[in-house]
Length: 577
Ligand code: GDP
Image (cartoon, rainbow, N blue to C red; front, side, top):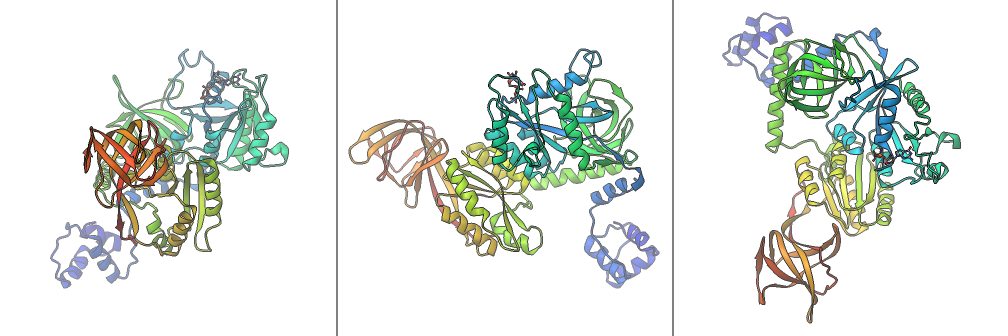
């Protein structure tokens, strides 16, 4: 703020503020911009309380405080459909849409804008049209809370499958209520009772069995019980009392954004609160705009869109990202200023400025600063059995200051989905005998997700205990030197087996301190040292990327074509606390 701004806020004359500054040997005019330190000092000298707030926060707060408490109305629930592949998510979404939206109304063309709304008993329900966990978690990772309720689709002929469990984990982590649609009950081999048993085993005991989970048996194909499902959605969300204020300026999330050849950038917005009108200035992520046209999910032009409305917005100056916040700002120049601020922040972040991610090393500090009371963890292990053992062991850790919160555990390599999930939940990932695949490793680096890789359960629990106590020793950081893919395997006398390999990353070397591991489907099969490295018939010290070579492990011979050999060194890194 300038000297004048500060004087206005303090209800003083600018010359009194200037005088105070001159006493401090600061020569300024009324239009000089003060840094926060100086402004704070002056304000305190005049006996004012000082609270820091960013310009952005202030603008957004002013926009939202215009609304009156009494203008609140009930808004429609927003539903995401999740479940295992082929259990009928898409079919269900289409069936609901067709049973509720007359074909004629949509002009014979099914308009897909990322969401649609249906009406039942004079109430509306909004469905997000992109089923699956990725979309859900991606939105959450960007801080968008869009979904009010998850409909978990489980096929009655197939039962609970890995992605069913995953969906449950995601809904739980997001603290979103869930109801189960047991689908495909028209099939001869449908067994809804089995699904209910499996749900009970996961702690989702159905209501008709005395539990709290609402289940509805449906057939998306035959359109059976769809109405009942919709009624249940209303019932469950009514308990949550979803409120919004149509009189305030619109606020919401970007669901999708694309460039249309004729019409320029278009974003599908879910208006969460307030009403969006033609002519409104807005900011979506770091993109500004002025609403030129609004088109609803049936392809009709609208003048305005109220709470819980999915709507296409024309009039953007660029493409926002899915999950970005959308907010009407009364003053176009302020919208531009916020946009610039956000673009600068994004730039600084990409320049490597440290984010607020939870890491094991920063855990203690975050507890001390009152920023966290729990340690969210995602466990990935080579087999389901060890994931369960580990989950159990970790669940027992914790004291009155901090608790371990296991948000998911499963078998398989650490993939991009896990990284997005960790980012959304600010979690640490523990890999037990598994490693991140290449894309996941790169993404984890970008998102600054702490991944801990171990091969012994004791090491995992020990590390977590130490992190909780703030006693984490300097960590050993692994430095990847190279990787090679095994093409064929030969029997050799001294080592038992040697692998004919192609070096695919970095270089393979036998230098001192170098260790090697053998991976099969991202699972660590063996760790040890390289016994022999050859190029053609000659022993060599190193082989570079793109070249063939022969590799044998010391005292290990179970190598198969398709395995990956990684070589690495370890380096101690001081803890950041
Ligand atoms: P998604 O992967 O979960 O989106 O599953 P889809 O909606 O693509 O459905 C997978 C398959 O199951 C398709 O062949 C559907 O026709 C079929 N399907 C979906 N719902 C039902 C149902 O209620 N009954 C029967 N018999 N088949 C269904």
